[in-house]
Length: 304
Image (tube, rainbow, N blue to C red):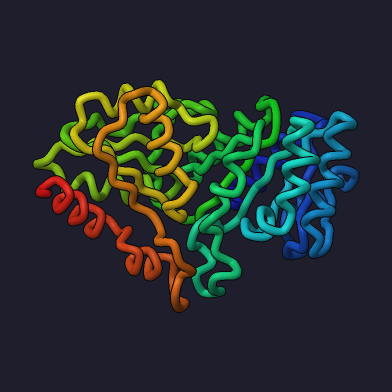
């Protein structure tokens, strides 16, 4: 997924002279071709994320569209003030490509796990937040990113994730994609958790479980959510993020504001730092977020 995003930056830069790339202490081989072809639009800065955002904001004020890439925790926690004041307050077209959303960097421990990035950025005015499901959808998002007005946070998965998106479904920032119609249950998922939502729905075939891929957490597609949830007895949110402040919070807020709140089960990471190390799948299992666990939790909730 990350390689697809970076390849698309190079492609977009060939089409549009306003596009440039800024990396923060990335490996020497990152976008080598772009560096050689257009060195005046390729920048590799050191471990100085806050400076990178300020630098990108200045370039955006001069008419450029900066695409910035580094690890998600560094891109959010280390420079939140600069994102708020330099990018969002001025409503500048910065594209924040965040590597390792959620539990991707599980072997490196809590310092590298982006389990609060959505919650940190969601309250910021003008900020859009998108989490594609796979590499194919990432390509469609990058196409759409060129003309998006204002700052955009792009949450990347690990890469090599199953392709579950469909080109015929199209892609538009802020427009959810129905994957399966709801019966008794609707799962609203985002990012790579959509493939797990579909797998859980397969296990709940007798119940009638729909899946709505909410790739854009902000601006949330409230109309699409209400239409998909209509008639469902239970709405389930599934995310690789803390239960506080992420997709689940956004969905409950939207349903409540519309006067359409119904029983809702928010599945995400618990309110504590992840314990231990290991793989992304291992930590998801510890949090009860693998498909069979999700299906079991939904069954127990319906039984109650």
